[in-house]
Length: 265
Length: 266
Image 1 (cartoon, rainbow over the protein chains, first blue to last red):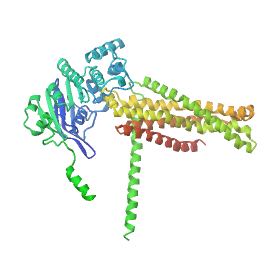
Image 2: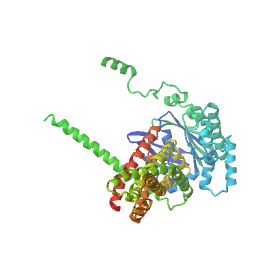
Image 3: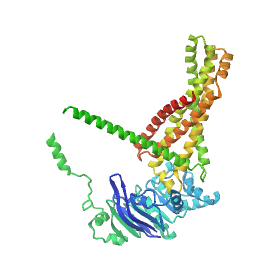
Image 4: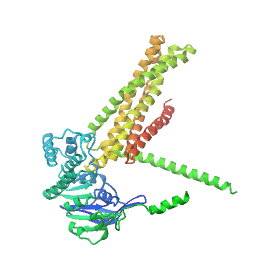
């Protein structure tokens, strides 16, 4: 469905994603996991065409989205949906208008039909009856669910999820995780989920990609990842601070810095 | 000899910094021009942004009306006081109406009106777009196949360009009216002379000059403020910095372009 070939991205001197090959299979949930700063969100933005790669190509079916015109890319995006990390609901619109937004923009459906579709999508996320609320009146979990409904309202072929459960309480996170899983299995949707929530990622994904320092260090089924012998994979899956992935980002030992400061004093 | 080297180094460093800043400035002007042209490219392309343009025009125009009324009134009143004081020294109080009206129509209306719109609407345009960038709303629009340059940038530029001349017209009328009240009712200038001198001395050339200035300033304010928000660093501090910079750059640009336009219209 989506392929990245020799795909890389740098911001000035900072390499966010080292050149890599990636394949997102159709009608399946692919979880891209990794620690903070591992390049997974940048990879998601490259795959969705939100970011231009420094090198390489992204293929959406047979089309190279890195080489296509902006107009063609916007046309293609009518088949895509995205749930952003902080929901990204349009502040000036209420819940109804946010969810109905893609329908108003890209279809000629009559308002009563749009009203029904929106109502159905909001029922699916458990928020029917909250149409009049503004984004500022929603909790984080509710905003994520509205964003989910908005992403699904056009029945897209592919949906990208950027940290769908981050910052949510366990119940809200569970609801979102179940929604992704249920929707993907019911409508045969292709989903790409970026998350550092190991349990959520492994429970909903058909395929898992694990990243560290802008590189893919493991890929396979959730079982493959759980049974991996790679020490980095095991450290991440078990959430241990000790291991090949350093917890501390400091370049010098703290005790050396303290001693040097003492000597200077 | 050894003392000369650090001085030379200092000059080179200073020249290097000046060059870098100059290049950055040129690059920024180019980037703003490209963004504006890209937005204007959507003017005749479907989907039409008419509804969003009307909403912006309403927000800009109605939102800035009160501040324009107050500024216009007090500007006219101060001009009448100052003008009367000066003209009385030459025994030419009858020219007060012409003086007040010419100053407002040719210069103060467009410039002060532009400043008020920058402070009231320009800063909020930058902040709004900057916040949309920080909260990924611009990216969300892109992902919903809606071009932010067409939906967000274009209606704001066109609305500012059309709202400012209308606001300046209000400013002019209120300013001249307030000048009349102070000149005639408070200072005792002959009302017939006030009106007659004013209508005799003002030509269509003066009025057109004011209109052209207002349209050009409106376009500049729209372009600068939308660009600053669109390119704001994606952080709360970045948005605050962009908003301040938008007000400063737009205000200074208005003054510079005002001089250039005035030299053409004299």
